[in-house]
Image 1 (cartoon, rainbow, N blue to C red):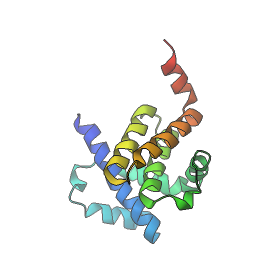
Image 2: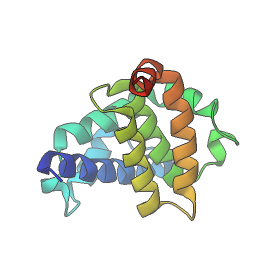
Image 3: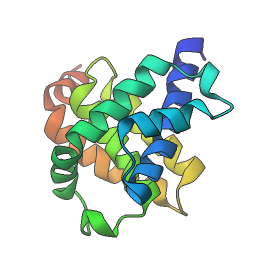
Amino acid sequence: MSKKRGNRRLSRELALRALYQWQLTGDDLARLLVQAETAEEYPDANIEFLKKLLEGVLREAEALNLALAQHLDRPVEQLSPIEHGILLIGAFELSHSLDVPYKVAINEAVNLAKAYGGTDGHKYVNGVLDKLAKAVRRTEIEAAARP
């Protein structure tokens, strides 16, 4: 694994922790970033990517929730804060980080769910983000399917 990818993976983990805090406390971006800086792993993270994720998810949370809601089997409010945070990160990457291939965005979210989510939460995350990808990354998916 390259250093850059490792840094991005760690950045996603730190973003998930921050989004968990945000959902429980309503802390603003500045406070979330200060908290992230206290994490032991922070120096090894891709800080620019972490900030992009947090700024983007907080700015686009309403639109991301609306996009996710179309593919959920329950209201967004009934998701666990961990699964919700993972889905927000995945949805943001699918819709706003076109430099990240859709399969990578989904796989990274699934890995977060395996590490932090409940039993079989990774399957739920995979299913929801796969459906969302078909809506927001249709051209990329169709191109990948062509021989």
